[in-house]
Image (cartoon, rainbow, N blue to C red; front, side):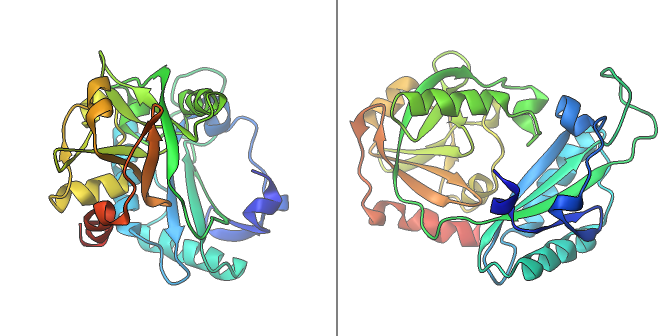
Length: 274
């Protein structure tokens, strides 16, 4: 994504700055090692949707990984709102990136690193139509920090998306343990079997997604292993994330699925109530 696609300004360490003038130190561990976390939040033109959910996930990941979030939540929210106002965008995807900061060569965590926090805003489509998805031969590292937290380490996802696109699909389903499915490249997977919506468990490599969590809390989706066989007998399926919401899958491994909006009404309603 180019700087122009992101707009002219960003929020960097507490200040609105022109993107062209922001300097990231070459020794920043986020750049050299992927040592950091990120969140992608939806700016609706009126609010940052599910801001508290996103901050709770980033805060949990930061504590588990020994990262420091350098600003209070209220300050972060105000910074993102200021960025959205400065951009004049009616809607957009706010990307909040936290890195551990600079450090010497090697993996050892520096004792006195100063974290960096950067936010950008990019345009998003007004609608997200149904897509085609297929299984790709990339396995999630279930149980690893890179699967349990939204880290900057996304090379597996990048490769998985490229493989899916090479097969003519829009997105790829990454594998979990044995014959299970974990998730898509940037979304959680939901399938409907015998009228029940199911999503792969965290233990199988699924990222604890924001929309996923809200639907589970609302009692509309249950956690349960999703196998290759399940994909052949599901009635409907969708991908969910904070930007696209509930996005139906029209073709799954060359199998056509029902995308009647009525099938997804309860999920879409539950996103707001979960």
